[in-house]
Length: 240
Length: 92
Image (cartoon, each protein chain N blue to C red):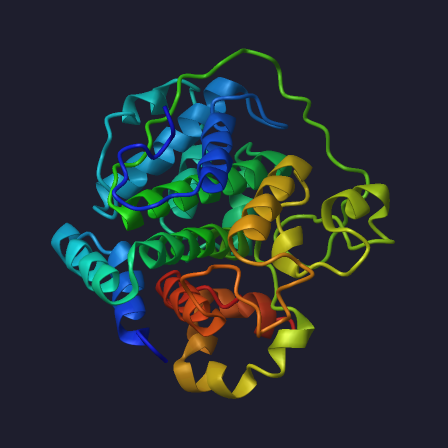
């Protein structure tokens, strides 16, 4: 059965495939978290949103207890789930001092942000959030940090654009300079790839974003796309 | 902008705890722009819910090519007062 079979609105097969893959990813091992930990992070994020009434429960919050998450990881997941508005360098430094590694921090940010993407979409088209799956295996994460990552002034290290970022940068962003948002999660290349895949398919690619005559949605003009985007970013107090 | 009011109301409502308000905004958008617009507006709201979180939590700065052209309206709209503004303006 398709992911949005219960929707009254015409969700494309392309969107269903992308979203189903994103949903499955939460229950699989990542670069820094086990499948159980990642599932627990996702459930913790959902719980934070349900507790503040910005989302309705679908009854999967009990999965939050699976990963035996440290308090600092719970704080990161909850803060990002609610928009990440108050997160600053001191918060990021503090949770790392309490044991959340820099790579794990970035993976939690990416995972929770991608979950918000799915949940806001479901809310928009009027269906319940899709239930989280049980973790699929107990493979240990690789915990590989890209050697190309460096300090660029952000809270965490990132992979620079090509050519400085080497083969990894080329595989993630191509040879043209990528906007900072597409590089934001690149300390965990898998999370960066997933963010880029979503933006390429659902917004604009790095190559098309500068063409203001272009719309990637038949039903909306470019200005109409941008007015929706601007209202969401205003709510999340996102300067970027 | 055509249907700007309906799109803004929908974007605001999709993040609101009020499900009745959201249902009304969705209906309004459906009536004036059709079902594909409801899906597309939801996709854009979802995508920016993702990137806003990544941007805020990683502390990335605004790209140079956007920073200067946006200077006048950022101040006017109060965007410079967002906490995450420090990630760009604090460093300049």
